[in-house]
Length: 292
Ligand code: MN
Image (cartoon, rainbow, N blue to C red; front, side, top):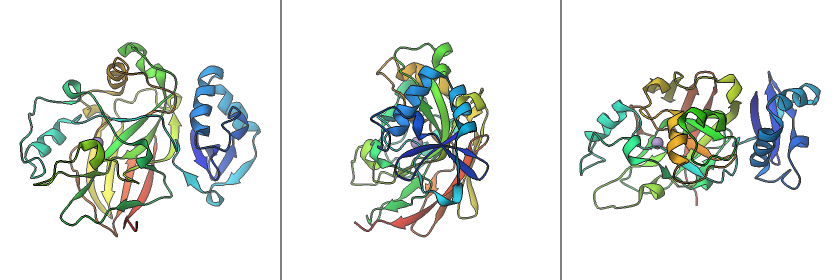
């Protein structure tokens, strides 16, 4: 099932060119709030994914073109992200002018764990990436598989980890690169408003039984910049959840950015970024100058 958040924080299933409103499944008092999808996901963990299908079969459809799509999880409690999780991306960063101090190529997401981005950096498929006006700085696209957590995960084994996944979405981890004379924390460089577009929907995990070989691509305008597969993840989805859940508790609706393959590069106002992940979907996000 493809799930969306739309209009005034309604939850829906996409079927063809229709959206079936599933908001009646959102527990009180979360309906119509930014947390509707989190509560919906938690509820589905209790009642089963088949509930979505039966509800979608009875629901009334709205033309997809008539609704305003929000980020599929507008307010995740946590937005975790893997650093350095594709070998060729590690290699490109090791020789990048943006890492003047150099990079230890042996340090991957397995050794480094995760970092956090502000969850308020999330925007949706109908939004734009807004670049702050900071002369001399570069802003890069990172093309990533986003994982949406389905139920509380604490100290879960690698074997049990995928059972805690609700679904998958496309995620762009926009990053202000380091520059000489600046020392900003990575968390801040990646947390500007609109620096985490996700969407256009969540594909539930039952449709992606094996997330370990999904083609992942990103274009800027018509130029293919990134092309890889989740087969190249150093730490795969199951192990990311296993390792993170040994550090903290993951909750329904949390989002995990799994890391970027090689080919990261600058985006500037006027560009359009397109991300596509096999079996999940695609979205186009324009890039503009921030006006505030
Ligand atoms: Mn990233």
